[in-house]
Amino acid sequence: MDPTDEQRPILASQVLERVGRDPARCYQCGKCTAGCPMSAEMPIKVGQIMRLVQLDRRERIFRDSSIWLCLTCETCSARCPMDCEPATVLDALREMVVQRDPALLPVRIRAMHQAFLAQIRKNGRVFEMGLVMGYKVRSGALMDDMTTAPGLYARGKLALTPRKLRGIADVQRIFNACGAQVGSGVADSLRYLGSRR
Amino acid sequence: MNIGYYPGCSVHATAREYEESLKAVASVLDLGLDEIPDWSCCGASSAHATNHLLGVALPARNLALAEAEEMTRVLAPCAACYGRLSNARFELGRDQALAREVGVVLRRPFRNSVQVVNVVEILQELLPRISQRTVRPLAGLKVASYYGCLLVRPSKVTGFDDPEAPTSMEQVVDATGAVSLQWNKRTTCCGAGLSLSRLGSVVRLGHAILNDARASGARAVVVACPMCHSNLDFRQAAINRSRQHGAPGRAGELPILYITQLVGLALGIAPSKLGLQRHFVSTRPLLERLLEQQGMEVA
Image (cartoon, rainbow over the protein chains, first blue to last red):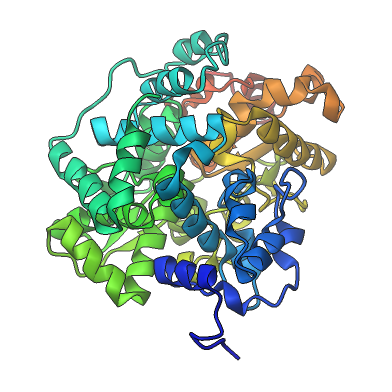
């Protein structure tokens, strides 16, 4: 039986409000953790995260890297017998962390998201070379992949200039509108995500 | 037959040969690709992982543009784009409040009427034509079909094939005359977006996938996603060097082909037109064997 609104813990209610999935329905069968390709690397496994949500232990989740290691491969969501969609629940938790304090993200993963979103915001599309450069600057991993660029170029796989959209203003407006829509914190976070450290 | 076309960002750079081979194959199979004018990025993993509304609105913009062009179906060759476009369509269909919110954000009319299809799905539809127009059957080539994540998951979103035991790619492979192998890691994730930020994870996951493919006797792995290709081809040198996982070295090199390249070879399209020279793991030994069997010379 589904929990009533009074029974549902606060964090679970907030997840439900954000993404329309109810973590309170989870009965801890463990299929999500068993199938998760990142379980081996996650300090807190996906099934444990679902339980922590039910127990309102947000600090335990927010101050750990586990939710940021999720690949959104959707194995958990495909197998969940209660249709909780753990991958979608993790999206909601990540959004909450971004809104509260982007400094809580693991540095390299934050750099990747920042660089990726900055590309879309600037060009409307991801210009891969810009993505890699943006990632390096933000993560400090300057020497990563130094030897791979010539190989990409030789294979004709390295575009050297971005193609900008005609409708770039349209895309930028969507970014702003999404920031403004879900609460004042997000606009700042997205601006943060779009700017250099 | 014509279909709407959403190329996605990576086919203009690292996955160039995916689009080259797709267009070459489409032309032989009389499939017209109508590119969505002024399409933008789907937001892939970074949008939905940081802002739910943005993760739906970015793909929805493209579906709205397609709808304005009266497209009923859109082909997204990249599995990640396919996943995000399908997810937007699905979430907008089940959540009225979200649909209203996205409507406000988009500021353009949108009835959510556009279907999203992936490359395997469209090739599966064209199977009779592929069989009919195959001029160089890839007889005896042992192929491991790798679905990865987002072609088949979650099935309520994609509505495509079986999430645990899919068969669509094997059907396409069989139509080329190649031999589909049974193996275990067909739907296990390759590490996707962590390629830059956490290469160790990609090496660990890629290693398990390639090892299983080799153990099954595969001469090539077939993919339908630029990220799967990049992680298994571009990153294969790192995977094969990894001592931690028991390095197979260069002897263990396994060519990674886009499914459109495999079909293109069977249709008699020149390897260079399919971009087979653009891979990091050389496809030349494979092509030489293949063409030798067919009594032809490598182009």
